[in-house]
Length: 103
Image 1 (cartoon, rainbow, N blue to C red):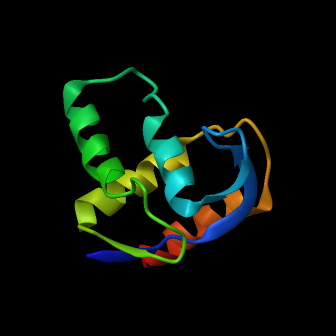
Image 2: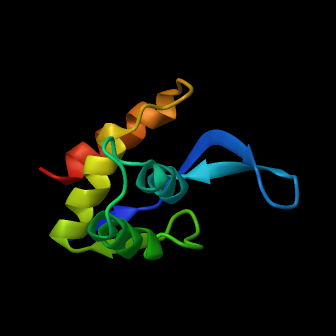
């Protein structure tokens, strides 16, 4: 079991209302989980990722989430595989945080 703290970052995005808001580690995680696998989607892969992303929905910054080891490993695998389309120090900090949790 891994306990994941949903930290806020200085990365911003527009929400549905058009307001600029900060992204959290949960939102970065969902972005990674939604990134297609290199060889495309299988239903098994979809199930695994949806199980993890369901725990990340509507989670406020500062809240902790408990992941089973397999769920955490899937999250980490997806984050490490993302080819981000921008560079930001908080993405590096996010990845370092996940790698640190796995030790």
